[in-house]
Length: 326
Ligand code: TRP
Image (tube, rainbow, N blue to C red; front, top):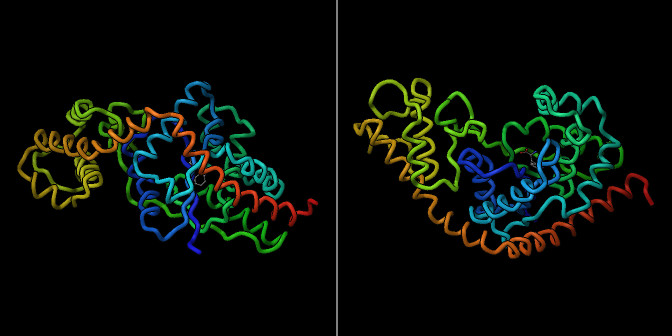
């Protein structure tokens, strides 16, 4: 049996290059390696912990499913589904609640940050990491590809697995994170900050037109000097552009720099925008095709749910029995 991988992606608006070049690209690579049994889902339940409009959320969920399919999550090779379709996740979360303390959850960085930002401290927001543990342990995952920001939540999953095993008998692996290291795509206009939709001028969306990309890249900040060199310490803004260029085209930074050394920033930026945009042509075509058939998207996740449910139901049954439910 191949090692099991589980990962969830929260629907929170259009995907940008920072999202894609983080966990999404990694997840697709892990799928393509053929070495793992991958389970990828849209974490729609996790997307309800902050204020939102139902119709916007429904659109976000659909768009994310379309994006992921167009990017290469392949439902023939990975189990691809919607979290809320598998009732066992929330059910397992309750059972894990009973072996988790409020103190563990109140200490989570993300919870504290969100509350500080003024989000209501809902029980859902507090309980978020336990549902995540349920998502992962339902499939007895060995590995979990996630962003750095999820490290503490994954640690909680490992705590839950350990506590469960100790109290009720050896059942779960303690899943290991596959952290997408080093690849932090920055905002084009504020290179000290991560690329994010809250900084729209510096954010390149996968669905941006070639023109829109060119415009944003042209107004990206650059560092002083004129020479195109890859120097993340002294020229972080330029290094960010080179990194995006390299990651999207598969060319090495050295190769890109060698070609553009004497181009000057303006010419380099245009070339970069064209290359990045061109690398997404196939994605855009696939995306348009998939988005035109919403029913097919539903069918795809339904098939995934059928596969996922079999495994999650088996785990839930085992957990209930071990916890003394008859
Ligand atoms: N909390 C994760 C995030 O915000 C999304 C997520 C939910 C997840 N359940 C998961 C990731 C299970 C990995 C495994 O990115």
